[in-house]
Amino acid sequence: MLRNILVVIINPKVGWQYIDDSANSTQRVLSSVFFPLLAILAVACFVPMIYDSATNTLSSTLMEAIVAFSKFMLTYFLCSYLLSGFYPQFNRSHIALAKLNNYIIYNLSYMIILTILIKILNGEFSPLYFLFFYMPYMAYRGSEFLCLEKGKKMKFVIISSLLMLAMPFLIELILNSLIKK
Image (cartoon, rainbow, N blue to C red; front, side, top):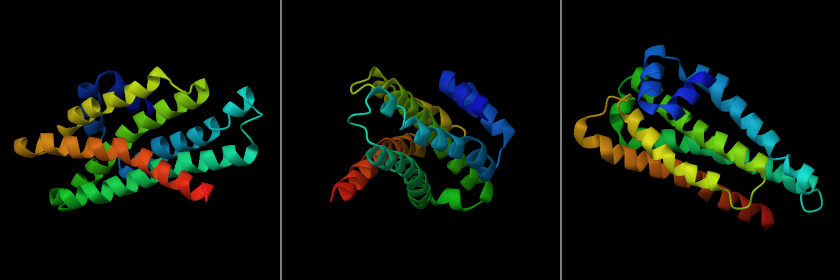
């Protein structure tokens, strides 16, 4: 499964075709890709304690790990709910809904990998943040995998990309503001 993510990142067109041919269930992709990456992300949040133990206390780092885990978990569920609501053709069959969920999982997995690298490299301003803008290209290539109609494809890519890019950051802002109160 990790190979699928790497192929999608390196060559999205071939990667999405490979994912479509493998026809893995959403539960399998969640358990073998998404949840392990979230666990690695939570552990990666503790790495800055090695570099700067004075400002990164255990309690603040634990809260940061919970927020990092939660923002991607909530983004997955909210994107799945909203996109299947905006596009009812995904609710017509179990296979179409599974493809939509896998599409969301693989795109978010790319973002999780970037976040892990940012946490490990411990940079306030990292050029890795610009790589988040590669995700819409991956999403565009994945829209062929979803078998959308020609007229709806670009609108779907824009909506799904905006949701997947903005939601983690908005959820993080909300959770951090709730923690500071």
